[in-house]
Image (cartoon, rainbow, N blue to C red; front, side):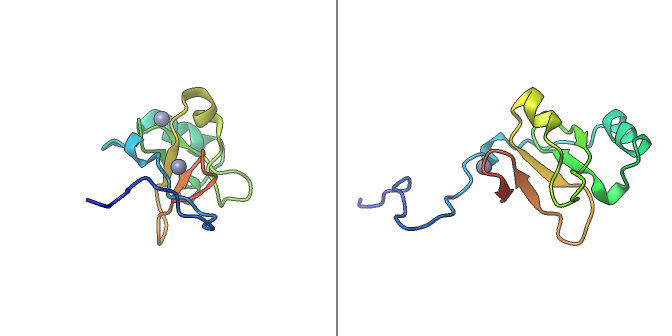
Length: 97
Ligand SMILES: [Zn+2]
Ligand SMILES: [Zn+2]
């Protein structure tokens, strides 16, 4: 066998996200979702923590989730709850994954 699944790819800036293993099958948490909507976020601003189901709002740019939940829990990946392509955001890699 000559495969090296974890060997680095030299010259590539974008390394694969290794944090998707933290993803669990989760349901959106109703209380945190309600809190975001009460704070003025719209349903398309909401992000779902893929480790525990916590719902967070977006940063003011709306392109990324706010990082309060990540700062408290180290849960690394969130997905947009609604939207045409529903991207996932990795807080550790600071990019869509
Ligand atoms: Zn990552
Ligand atoms: Zn979480």
